[in-house]
Amino acid sequence: GIQVEQSPPDLILQEGANSTLRCNFSDSVNNLQWFHQNPWGQLINLFYIPSGTKQNGRLSATTVATERYSLLYISSSQTTDSGVYFCAVEDSGAGSYQLTFGKGTKLSVIP
Amino acid sequence: GAGVSQSPSNKVTEKGKDVELRCDPISGHTALYWYRQRLGQGLEFLIYFQGNSAPDKSGLPSDRFSAERTGESVSTLTIQRTQQEDSAVYLCASSLGGGAAEAFFGQGTRLTVV
Image 1 (cartoon, each protein chain N blue to C red):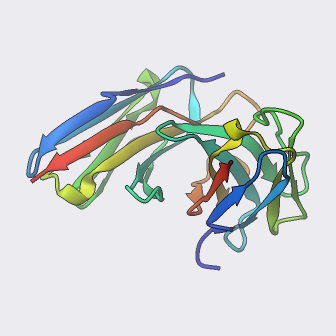
Image 2: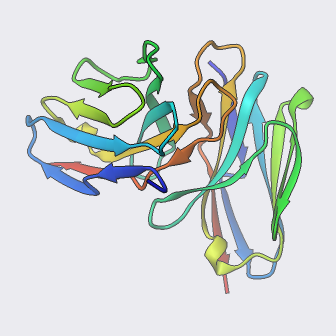
């Protein structure tokens, strides 16, 4: 099946700093989503971005489907950004619509 | 409803007992997924339903696990003869389906087997 690798696995930021999270995937995809899992375990949708670039406030994401990676940018980080960021993809050739998740990037933003 | 709803939020059960977990998808969503997340780990796919098509059961870890869904409504995940390694958060998601559709997750059911 499709492989999804996220980097870095852990990241500690000072409040106000910027960061870039990366998601590499091993095959072509129909769907790519970024989620934020908050400390209470809730998965919050950040971006649905199988290709192209999107922005939402301090967050933006870019997916380069032909090169099989996606980037999530967090600018001016806040303590509320802490949590785990997951990338999930749907393999376009698998004949199944399951979403395969990476292992996540654990972000800690310190004041 | 406005979002994906799961019940119960928490469940503690004795080893060997059967448990049923429930998921109410977003109204109009034809696709429904179940995932398992062990403590500090990523999400493991369990099963996918799309309308009245045969479900993709490829992620179910053993024959103790089963799931049902009638049409585009509620789904139940059943774990028989629970084991301690079944302790995890079970997450349900729904989408408009047919692939390439944004999935939305419920808050999960935290299962503890003692």
